[in-house]
Amino acid sequence: MKFRQIIHILAIIACIACFIPPVLAADEAPQDEATTFYNRGELLLDTNDYESAIAQFDQALASNTTLIKMSNGLLYTYRDKAYAQIQLKKYNEALQTLDQGLALYPKDNMLWNNKGYANYILGKYPEALAAYNNALLFEKNYTIALINKGDTLSKMGDYSGAIDTYKIALESDPGNRDATAGLAAAQQAAASTIPTSMMVILVLVIIVAAGAVWYIKCKKPEEKPEEKKPQGKKK
Image 1 (tube, rainbow, N blue to C red):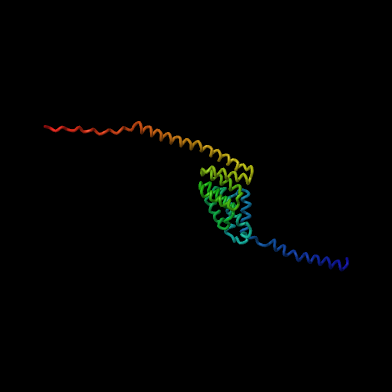
Image 2 (image 1 turned 30 degrees about the horizontal axis):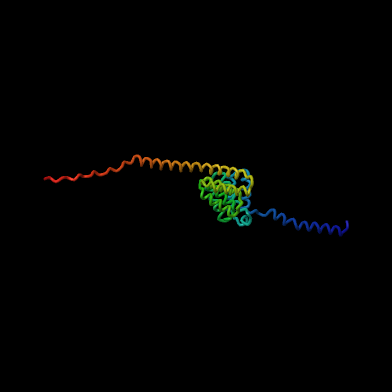
């Protein structure tokens, strides 16, 4: 082998050696704790281990969230923690988590939608409706929020509003089964309220008419006062 070839090979080896330490250093760099806990929580969420997932998300939120906040990781932490709490039927706790998330991300439509759902399950329909409206304020074609809003309006007896909302949901997602079923139920409920209203009016009319007849037949005429006969003067 010529001397020049040996020198060339040694130069290549030296260059490769220069790149090895930085790569190893990058591999050995410590991970951000909040991100580590968040990733563990996501893995547990995928296995439906909601209690353990919540514990990991809590650890993430208790850590330094500076780096995780630079991405969507912090937002997803609040979203997924609340989702796990809802799955465990811990609706009041979920509402607390959602409010904490909304304090940082007030325009996140998913946080608003989930807040609406938790309130809906708790029977707080006006609060649920307000939350769904906020979700739709930031994404007007948010199909899930539209369906949930339709369900809430139906519960509140506003079938006309529910029908309109389901129709908008079907415009954004044609053929959606939940929207289709909700629309059919709202239309049926709206149709059934018409005969009921008519019956109520008819009953009221009958009661008023019967009362009038009774009054006319049973009321005694006023007796005229007896006329006093003039007394003759005694002679």
